[in-house]
Amino acid sequence: MKKTAAVVGILCVLTGALFATEARIEGLGKTNVFFRDVTEIYYNPALLYNHVNSVEGEFGTYTGSAPMDSWAGFNHQLTEAIYWGIAAQRKEGEIGHLSGLELYPHNGLNILLNYKMEALSFGLGLYKSGNKSLEKSVNEEGDVVSETETSVGVLGFRVGGVFETYNESVFEGAVAINMNSYKNEQTVGDETETNELDGGLGIDLKLRGFMPMFGEGTKFVPAFSLNTFSYKSKYENSANPDLNTTSGSISDMSMSLSAGLNHEVYGAMIAGGLSFDYITHKDESDTTRTITKTEIHLPRVNLGVEKELSDHFTGRFGLQKIMGTITTKDEDSDGAYDEVTSIAAEDVYDENFISAGLSAVFGDLSIDMALETDALFNGGYIFSGVPASLNYKLSVLYTF
Image (cartoon, rainbow, N blue to C red):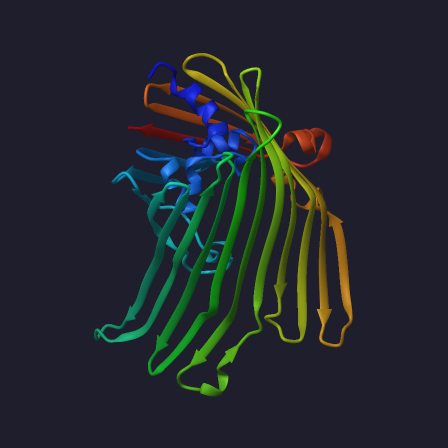
């Protein structure tokens, strides 16, 4: 290769085939919806053909304690038209965001398959994770006095497609269905009490396009995403069925419409855009009241800049800023309600951040690092009284 991998990485933002990592995305202000990166294959497996023959290691997010969300992935071109990939320890599904559970899913496994034929590409993805525990209390005679068994898991399926037009425009879409499950059984004598999720279906839709405009090297990127998740809590008592109950539903829905550009100027890549987000959480578990939390971002701003510093090093800067409102409404069955509206930036200050990143590239090996802090938007603690967080990420990518 006559050019270093760092230069190729910058140019491929505009041409399509880009190997990126979570640390690179973080360093660019989470603007990855507006450029290509290798992690997109887990949201749309039809894009595997853009990111073949690589091994990715994500060391997670460090916040001053043990790293969170570490995982590793591998993808490979099997034949001229068939590509496949696999990843371990990724976290997907919605149940991992629920609080108060005794267990959460572990050991995530992704399996991806992609078939590419000329201007069309099709992809399939399978995801599985789970966890299980068993506790027993045994008396001196060896008899089981009580037993508690808990299981949790996610089974997900994803299908995606890509269409490349004659003028180098690319249109892509993917839909995923996640089946989230949770069950806790406590047995004492002849009585078994069961608490479990009823429902737990999550649906995720993503659409995106890359359209050349303003001459060579600039692309307009529109995007749309929709995610829904709903469930009920179910209780059963084997000794007294009259106690069996099913709560009202709890549902989440998020929708985002984005528009942005990526552009190369003076040897640097600039990617960014605006997103309009609508996020709602509705809790009807208590049938006598409904609690609704609605968050509207008008808009969410993401901006990232990347510049090659030398043959082996590339620097990055990014930011995310949210502007909007959050409304919480507590309504009883008679129609009376209390409502509180606040500025979104005050309620989600940790989502407003600046970031900086650095890549070190040596042949086919790249090491990406990123730092993120919300100090810029909240002021130093001595002025604002709000402590600023500092997170950092580390990723390693090897291509072959």
